[in-house]
Image 1 (cartoon, rainbow, N blue to C red):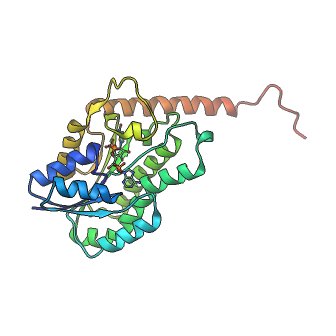
Image 2 (tube, rainbow, N blue to C red):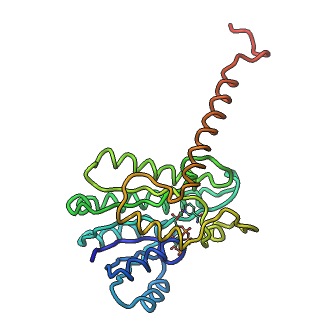
Image 3 (cartoon, helix red, strand yellow):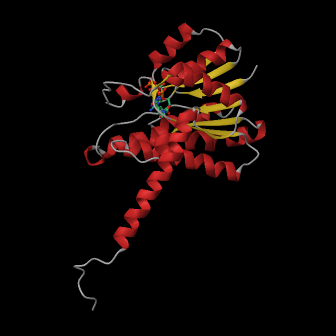
Length: 253
Ligand SMILES: NC(=O)c1ccc[n+]([C@@H]2O[C@H](COP(=O)([O-])OP(=O)(O)OC[C@H]3O[C@@H](n4cnc5c(N)ncnc54)[C@H](OP(=O)(O)O)[C@@H]3O)[C@@H](O)[C@H]2O)c1
């Protein structure tokens, strides 16, 4: 039996991981953001589940959470919670941008910072849930994409600085969860989306065994590599064009 710290378990991929952990007889400390979520989960899973409440977009609440967690030991720390706000960058409020950055990136940096002594001592496994949008630029998700790129890079930096800690960074593609509605996007069709059960189960299996970076699906891995290659080519062409001297450039003094 192992001890897990899980964030983002009230719906989607994290709810599948929570179910798997408890079904396999592990003990879980789950972080949720509201007290009614704590009560609901407590009724659904009366055994082996301890629940902490913290709004991860609120820095002082995360500091309090970290203080409460520091006396405990875990074998696995899964940082899965995350959310987005959809829209053109100039139409987003700075408040929304801050919320996404704090919830998706800075809260995870705070949690890792506070728990690192325990993680190093226990050789606990650290798992980050990132997104392929960390690698491939798209529109209407600027803050989200930047927060996930930061998270993926945070993983990369930590894995160099602490090679002894087993770490996994999961950069997933579209999954059929509540994520998009919460972000304010009404999707008419979800072609190409994977089921949350499938990805939740793959995440659970990967977190027990794997380290490094993974996408959890072969087609996402190929798509990511292809898109990274294409976006790199486009960027290079644009850079070359903008570096060319303009025909109308004023004569140099
Ligand atoms: N679904 C996709 O297509 C997709 C693609 C790439 C990456 N991901 C990533 O996968 C992870 C899981 O997402 P999901 O698809 O399972 O979405 P989801 O069903 O919306 O689950 C997200 C979980 O994170 C929690 N959460 C979000 N913001 C929080 C905050 N500020 N404080 C505390 N908890 C917070 C949510 O709590 P509430 O129930 O209170 O909202 C929920 O439990 C996220 O990191 C997401 O960025 C998802």
